[in-house]
Image (cartoon, rainbow, N blue to C red; front, side, top):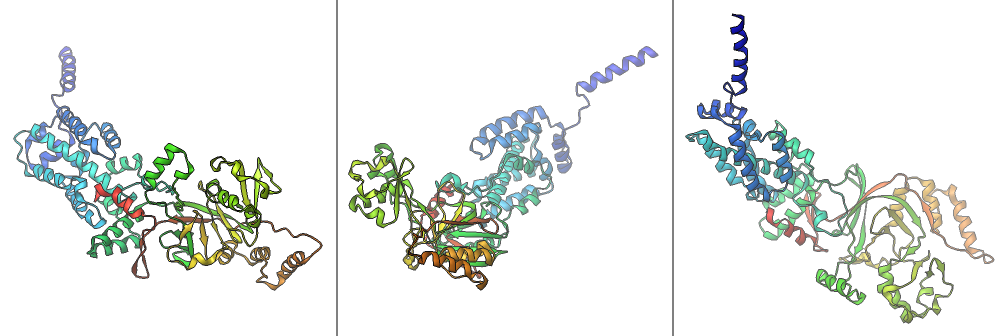
Amino acid sequence: MKNIRFLIVPVVLFISACGWFKSPPEIGKVLAEHFKNNIYKDFDTVAYDSVFVNTLASLSHNFANPKTIKSFYEANNDEPRLVTKFFVNGTLDSLTHYLENSTAHGLNPAIFKTDEIKALLRELAANKFKKVDDAYPVIAKLEILSANAYLNYTNFLKFGVVNPRNIFSRYYIRVKRPDSAGMLNLLGSDHMLDSLKSAQPVSPQYKALQAAYLNANGADEKRILAVNMERFRWRMPVTGNNFVQVNIPDFRLTWFDNLDTVITMKVCVGGKRENGYEEKMKVYLKSHNLDDKPKNHETPLLYSEINSIQANPIWNIPVSIAQSEIYWMARKDPYYLSNSNINVYYKGKLIAEPDTINWGNYSRDKLPFKFKQGSGDGNALGKFKFIFNNSSSIYLHDTNNKNGFALRNRAISHGCVRIEKPLEFAEKLVGDTYTYDKLRAEVDLPPVDSTHMKWYQKRMAAKADTLKTFQLKPAWFAPKKRIPLLITYFTAWSQNGRIEYRPDVYEMDEKLWMAMKKYR
């Protein structure tokens, strides 16, 4: 009897190992119970896996995130996780409702294969398969298209349809983009509906533009609203409640504090690039002749922090301006440099008499000189320069030519941002009367606090002393704290309960609209 008992154990183990008592996978159980159809109890994961792999290979070449989707299913044995969790409870039907309503965001439901997903859902729901093998292609395709649509829809609404850094050469704001970890979490989540709901943009600006978009009749107005909705989908760096924004199409700087406007003023920004810039640039890159180089002074879009203020600034003249303007002015008038308080340096040494330079001996594309305009009333930067880290060597500054602020189109600078009220801006930055009065004294203004009058009087006495030469020098001041700065581009936004529109001064709307073409 003992021998018989010992024989039974190996036989049972052998039978179990061969899968004779193997239960159907989760998808088989779910569909068998839901449809009361026993064919799903014969669901063969090996046979399904082969269908799934081939289907994924045929579909994923057009996916935005094929590697992420593939890695998710490889980690989950190619199981139809979404169909298993979300078909029976109707969540996949809800997904198609969200996809269909993407028109409210200026998107085309067709980009998500919405109709195909709906057709596959109907085919599976019809429960007309004669054998389980016939269901494999439908389940596999439904799973894959649903996963791709789910990721694309949530990514588009949470991060934007396009990455602006890929389409605009001077877009330096590091917008947050979807990453593989976040997408894997989405696919593995048990709460698809919650994810779809949380993806909906909730900012007041976006909601206002969306409402206007849904009520707009004209194609041009809808286009403007659609591209600006896209801009509000881009995930900007966190600025906190206290930050400065320059909106280029509005030609305006605004300081926000808890969404309240603390300061607002006109600005002048960089001039628009030449018409036909791209084609002209191709010619220049072949010829390397500066006469062929097209002009592009457009102010870059960026995020930084204002870290210092320079009163009575020195202007380090960029090479591009030296080549295109200073060189010709100096050739035309030998005294132009000295009359404009521009110092010339050769190998780091100041040239005492730049008027004697024979500019005809030098090619402007190989100028061995550096140029700096000294502090003073004639300085192009005016009396204040506001400095922030950036790769384009631009800054906010005052100007010695205030006439530009009277223009409607104020895209007139070489790229820096001229501000209308630099003194008011400086006062807000330094944040206390003591420092502000020190700053005022440096630009020959009496103090706000009369107890600081001695600084002003001492400076005025030094300037009036005929026995000593008074040399105007830059003075540096630190803001009370570093203030985030965003230089942005919006041609439509909500303000005081209405939508404001501005001209597309850099023609960036059209470029963005074309980049969004396959999504709309």
